[in-house]
Length: 277
Image (cartoon, rainbow, N blue to C red):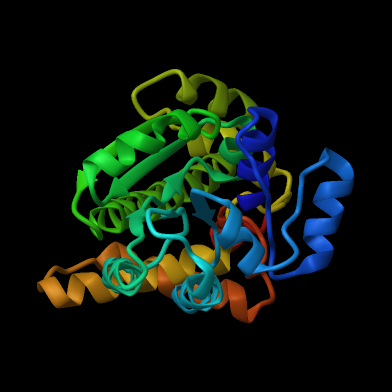
């Protein structure tokens, strides 16, 4: 996700420098696309007015923020495009107040394809005026940016998105397994259903590949499992029941135990597909 965003920012002329904790990945990206690299977080903090972060988990976010914080200049805006808890977003904002820097939690949806194409949907929590200042930059990586409210609101909205994604994954994989068991021409099923009321992005972009056993990652099982764990914790704090999330977490745990954690979430089809078709 971060690579796609960095490439599009570079193409649009916005990228001052990129940095990655795994240097080899950054070097490969620079060699292929000509991206300028920062030597370390200090160099990044000293030269950028806006810093976009893309990491995998809450602890990763704070690791990177602590590396950046000593060298941040007052007035710098940090946007976290990762999926973390709303509480972590609020903690990050407090941490950056000591450096007189603004923080926006800005998780994105659209998968790796959206990051590559620059068509991500971004849900933002934080100061609206700060968001308006950086909107011209965001046009290079997003098709839609919506301000959701104070810090933490972006992550809460992303939790809604991830719960919906779990339900869609369950519904599509189960329906396609049923269709296959009926002996239908599944390519034709996907073609006609995609044009009706049940059509959706996941069916259109993952339906055919999952039927052929291709689960190359767009959004990894292990990452969605992590996100749904955040959703579960937030729901428990609000006394909300999420039975579909509980079911999907259990299914993902089975997939991960079988060695499929780095596959696309469409690998859920492995647990549903008929064995005699």
